[in-house]
Amino acid sequence: MKRAKALFYLVTKQDEKKIIIFALLAWANYIFAQPHINWVNYTSSIRATDIDIENENIWISTFGGLVKYNKKNGDKSFYNRANSNLPDNYLTGIFCTENGDVWVSSKNYGIGKFNNSNCTIYNQSNSGLPSNLFNTKVKLNNNGNIWVASLRWIAKYDGAKWKKWITGSDLSAFPIVSDFDIAKDGTVWIYSTDGIGKIEKDEYTIVSTIGSGLIAKTGFIKVDNEGAVWIAIEDDGIYKYDGSSFINYNTTNSCLPTNLIYAIDLDRAYQCRYFYIQSRFCNPNYKRDK
Image (cartoon, rainbow, N blue to C red; front, side, top):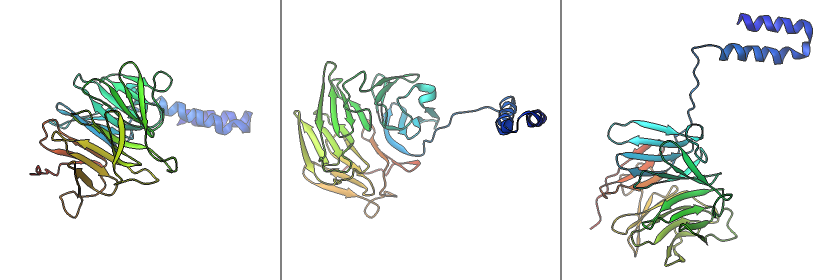
C-alpha cells in the first residue's frame, strides 16, 4: 500500500488528469505482486445440459464446460476452453465413444472431439456442419457415422459426405432440434419444435406433436435397449413411448421430485436411469414395464 500511495502523490504534482489511471496501475502492480494470491479458473457447472456414461465415469456437459464424475469415488474433474481447447464453455451435448473419445456440441462454435487432454474442433469453416450456432447434440452410430443436431437441421457425416434433414416450420419463432438418439436398428429419434419425430431409411416423419410449438422447449430423448423411447420435456416430466402409446411420468404419479429435468441417460446395462435435476443426480429406480 505504501508503494501505491507514493506513486499517487507523485502523479498529483505533475498532471491531475493522470491521477486515476496511475493510481489504478499502482494498485494492480501491488496486488499481482503478492506471492499468496493464486488465480484458479472456475466456470459454472450448476446447469447441466447433457450426460453420458463411460465405464466408471459420468460425463456432464454444462454451461461452464465439461465435468467428469467418477461413480466409485465421487471425484470430479473440470474442463473448459482455458485448459482443454473446447469449442465453447457453453456446451449443449455430449457423447462418449468406446475408444474413450468424448464428443461435445456447443452453442456458438460448432462441435468438438475431446480426448481427456485436448479437443479437435469442427465448424462450418472446416466441415459440412449446417450451422456454427446451436449445435445441441452430437452422436456416433454403430457404423461410425457422425450425427449432429445443428440448429433446425439433423446432419450426418459418413466420412465422405454430409447429408441433412430440416425440421420445424418456417413460421416458428425459434425452430431447433433439442435432442436426438439413435436406436439399435439405426432409427434416429428426434425431439424438436415439430414434437417427436424419427429418421428411418433416410425419411423424416413426425410421430407425435407432444412438446411441439412455435417456440422451442428444452427436451431430451433416449432409446433404451428394448426399443422404448424416453423423452424429458421442459416442465412436463418424462414420457415413455413403446411404439404405440405414450405414458407420462411426473411428480403426481412417480417418484420424480420435479418435472423440470435437465438431462437424461440410461446406463449400458439397462439397470437404471439417470436424471440430472438442477445441481444433483436423481435415480428414481424405475422398474421395467411388463
